Length: 123
Image (tube, rainbow, N blue to C red):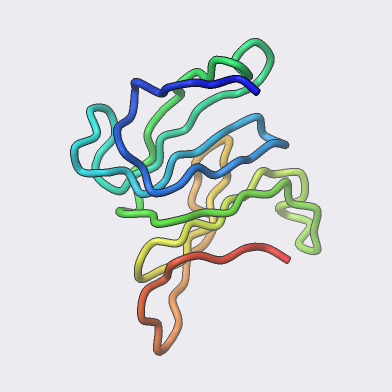
């Protein structure tokens, strides 16, 4: 198992694996982060030679603080999204769905009676 210290990011709440997309996403960025704004995502490429030395790709801060996420290669039932790498972002008061390759926001919603949108997953 390779060890790696991401000097591009500071403290994070969690790391989310998106193996089908060859990406690792740091969520819940700490306010002292040197690269990405507070609460945003830091996205790393782990394809090919980057697998042992993840390569920082970008920040994503279009939706505010993201506490957690779950990413999948989408297989259906909605044919419009089949084959896309979709992430559900759990962002305190809303859930966002984004395309991990383009960072397009596909949809978002909230629900009555939420206390804190903490985490979730596809099933």
